[in-house]
Length: 244
Image 1 (spheres, one colour):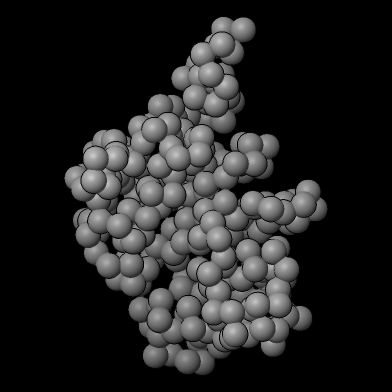
Image 2 (cartoon, helix red, strand yellow):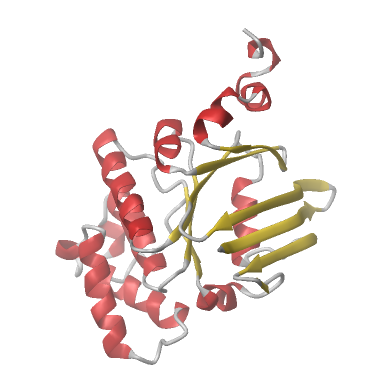
């Protein structure tokens, strides 16, 4: 089943094109990696899908329904959640309070307090933050803050989870733990799009890779195919490396 479709998506900021007619799809149950050099439009794509920015042109469909131009909270309640490159918790609230607040405002069934409380406890265990439930978010490590980002997104019960550089700044052990979490979420039925600069991690996790450069999709396919694509090599390493 096709879960997400983007058709001809353009995002322009004044005279600057951040996205140039991007077409893509994500099928139910996939892990799709989004890669590309810095400034290629990856996070802008997530911002458009999640409603942070309306597209200048083009259409975004989720589960066959046109969601183009809907507000972020409306899209979230339909089943799309996202994390941010820089974690954005409520710094003076506890870990538990952060997750509960995200669930309360991000879920369509937010009035069911008991269900939310049960979900928060389950999510705390799932992301390894059970012992940090009462910790103020400001006092968490980088890894713990990234897990809190994921936890808050999960609390909204997403069908599609957008992970934006969730492994950035993590050490090798933490990266492995994060990758296992992502794989586990897919096994639970959550479809995932992941932006990542850790090539080994994203190639190992993804069923399919989409490559952006200067706002344009330049390649798409299985990880091994994408690694050999000359356009991808050119975008990352420059013309001198093509054919060498």
